[in-house]
Length: 466
Image (cartoon, rainbow, N blue to C red):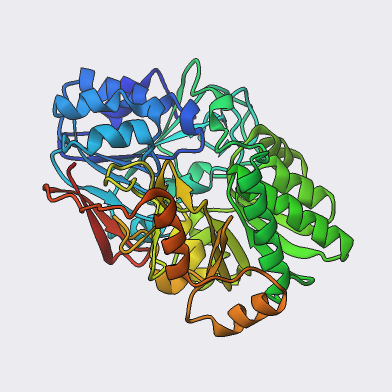
C-alpha cells in the first residue's frame, strides 16, 4: 500500500476541493517556501475559485498570491502574520473578505475546537515515507520543527503531504504520523532552506541596540526571576540577541541553570543550551540552520506543537510557565498596549505571532524598542492597532530609560534599587516628541480589511483600508 499520488493536481482532485473551501499551510520554510504558491497556482489552473487561504504566516515569497486575489481564486485569508510586501498590497483593500488575524496559540485552539474549519491541509514536509510519516529534521529542505502544522494535520478533513525527500517506510523518527495523512506528493523541491532565516540572526553592533540589550539583561537580573529553573523566550532581532548574550554572561558568571528556553530558536539559543545555561530548548519553530541541526542531533532540543507552546484551550502550556519574554514593538502607547500588526500609518507589516500569547503567560513581559524609529516616536497616545493588551506588558526598555507598567509597583522598586534608569512612560514620550515632534496620526477610516483576534478568539481590534 502507498499514499503516493502522481502530482498536486491528482491530490487536489482526490481531496474533492471545490469553490468556497478552505485550504491551509504552515510557514516553517518561511521566506523559502515553494509549496503554497505551487498549490494555489494549480488550484487556479483547475478553475477553482473563492478559496479561503488559512496559512499560519505569509511572507514576501508568497506575493504571487496577490494575483490570485485579484482574479477571484483567493477571497479570504486567515493567518497569524503577514510580511511587509504582501501586507502593503492587502492594505489597499483588494481582498473580498476581511483578513482574520490570530495568534500562534489562538490558531491551533480555534482549529482543534472547530471554530476554524479546514477542508484540505497541504503540509510541506522535508522528509516523508510513502504513507505520510513526516519530519522537518532531515532532507535537502530541512526546516527543523513542524510545530505549526500539527493542528492542521490532526483536524483538516483531508491532509496532503508535499515532500521532496521520500525515505523508507516506516520512518522511525517522525513528527507527524501517517494516521493523519491522506495523500503524499513527491515534488522536485519544496523550498529553499536558507529562506527560513528570520530576523537579523546577528547580534547588533549598533550602540543604541547595545544599550537597550544591556538594560534588558539588567532588568532580568534585578527582577528576582533569574535563578535556577529560570525559563526564557526571546526573538531573533539584533538587540534581542544581544540581550540574550548579556544574559548568558550573567548566568555563566553566577552559575545559574535555567529550565528551558523557547520560541523561535536561533543558534544563539543553541549556544546557551550547549553552555549549560538551560536544560532544554522547546522548539515550535527554527529561525536558522544552526537550530535545525541542533534539533536533529541534540535530545535536549525538543520539537513542540503550537498547541503545546501557547494554546489557551489546553490544560497547560509552555507560555504559562514562562518567567521572562523579550518582545519587540512597532508602537507602544501610554497604557502599554503594543502594536506589531501595522506601521504607524496603518499599513499591515506583521502580526502577533506568539507576541500576545507569551505576554499573557510570562511573569515578566519586556518590550525592547528604540525611543524613535525613522523619525517617529515609538511611544504614542494610542497605538494604531492593539496586538497585545497593556495589562499583559510589564516593562518598556529604550535607550533613554526604562518605563514600568504602573500595575507593577514591586518591580519598579526593584529596578530603582538596582540603580536602573526608571522613567515614567509619559516622560519618555515627551523626550521622543522633543526629538521628532509630536506625531499627528489619525487612524484609517476606510472599510475594515482585517479583524484582529486575541488568543481567546475575542475581537481585540480592526484594521482599516489605507
